[in-house]
Length: 186
Image (tube, rainbow, N blue to C red; front, top):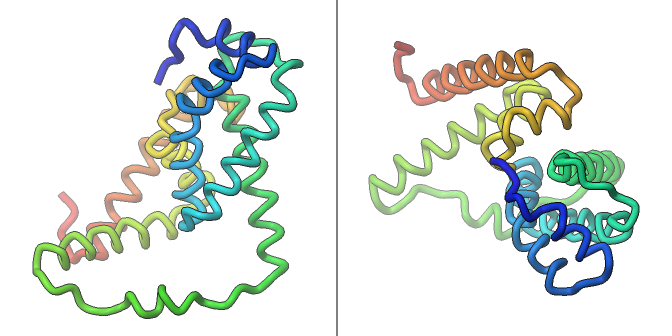
């Protein structure tokens, strides 16, 4: 997804303390950062907490940021770092399973819901089986809505390498889903 042409002036206004400009920045980029984080954490509340932390950091550092068409890469780098920090912190602290989650386990009432739930479960399971780098590429592209050049800048990889990784990751994901659902690979 390309940035609108008004990103540089918008960031300058937000850095200067313009509340309306800051609101536009958060509304424009917040949902994509949240979606990326939610896909990694599987916890909307945690994703919201990390998203808020990301935008607090951006607000503090925006005055020193010089827009050169790489704002999204910079923003997602902050999000990725916050996510890694939180995951490291959480590994050190065990958390009990939420009773609501356990209560939700059970057969669906309608066949259509079951099929959809099975497909979503297959997707979630397949995503968990992907390597970290493959999953990151899929999430940045499809949850974060980033373009390939932006992803290449963020991950500091050549564009061609990133395109090939994305293609291979999608192929692996498809095979894992088909295996889980018992389908033949074409």
